[in-house]
Length: 452
Image (cartoon, rainbow, N blue to C red; front, side):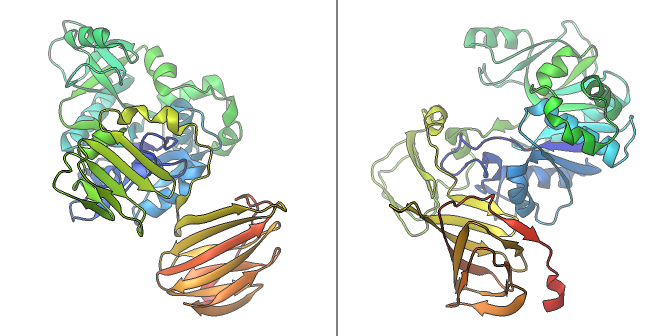
């Protein structure tokens, strides 16, 4: 059995900690078994590995998330398939399925399970996945879904309605799907024995590839990726599940939460306060998350509030209203001020435009020991690097030297440069130019092994 792990999202529901490059599933707010912090993405990977149900994992994601995924894999093996553009869940699953079929060479009978990376759940969830896989192998249905047993009527989820008067069996034939009903309809559906659609699907690889080939006939994974825009921009539920002639649902009754609002996230945090927080005894039911290391948040008399602060901004709202922030966040046009990359992290600490049209962008970069920033040039900007902690190997125009705290390097446009961290390394980068964009970069090969 092969798992396709879906990792998408635009990072607005848990703003200001989440942004376009750090979606909610990557926030390290949860507590791992060893007491360290982990993200929803890391929790799901750990659970998949601990249960041993997956022979391999393929992560379906966007190009903007590839660095943070590389940073959070923590040595775990997984293939990563990136969409050329965001086109909803059907194209993403189709592309990853084509990777497994045409690149990895798995046969039509290989069972595939699609799992969202941000489900907050427990062991029974993975037992239900095993049941789904067995149902596919036993030809109970061509497509098998997981149905979450509802705890209350909800307008946030789609519903799966099984056929009535079914006896025995762990996989129930599906009669119909209903997308996000109103409250009255949700109550009616639950009375009919409906389940929440948990977004988990199992099928044989050949089944999905036949559907893909109805849209595009391709001979290679690369060809499908090049023609990705020809796939319909539609969800897997609409394109596959609701059109399926043979579909069943496996019920799961256990812990399952969508940590997509600050209120739901706060319920699972190990501590109500994180970061530099000072609160008195009159603060009650309030959750405060502060990523601004040198700036305290003081709380006096707040009740049932969410306060979250990051380099991107500050959110203050009641827990009850936390799900209503998204339309307001969509009004913000600023670039992300904090990003995780495969080599470490950076935080924007200054961004200024001058009367003559020149701009300066100041970042604090942290390189993890052993990681490096690629050998590169810029055409439209100069940079000044000031090293403040740790040691590294610096390359400028082919010349290699060791740098450490207090060293300053001036990099002119067109100069070749790279840095590798010998220990945990921090430096301040000041970019100056008329056009400061991430696309102003040309990368070149460099063999670090010669100098280590």
